[in-house]
Length: 166
Image (cartoon, rainbow, N blue to C red; front, side):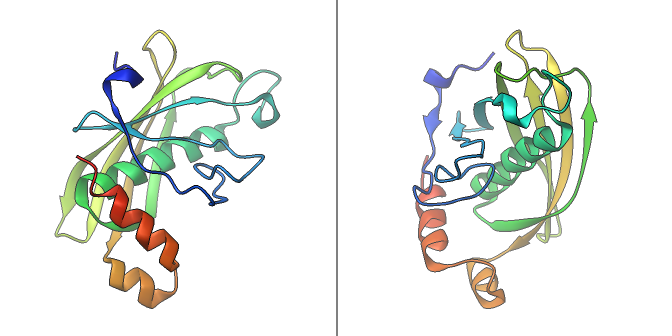
């Protein structure tokens, strides 16, 4: 199994409130992202206020974690911004709150330069697959995202630092 110590930490925005990755969201997951050059990883411990049943992580939270890791894999691997078009999730094994999981994301394919097909996997502490997702992301250039008013300058500045990491 991949270890955090063997990966490179990717730049994060420091004043962002995204539920999945924003360090400023007091209720969020505060995900950090790492790479070994071929995949993107995150190690996440979901707090108990995000449970579904008593001690299990809510499926919507698991879906968010998978969407985040797949989006980062798409951005890093393809040096492109994108928006989630669709995703499917298979919930294979329950994930318990308060237990650290490892999440892996990678790009599987690119369709005509317009869409990225990605995969995200959540592993428990023993390396067993808990959830698996496939996502399709519509790709956008920085200029297109800016024109559409989807993002702001500080996000674009962060993205340019993010894609420079080797």
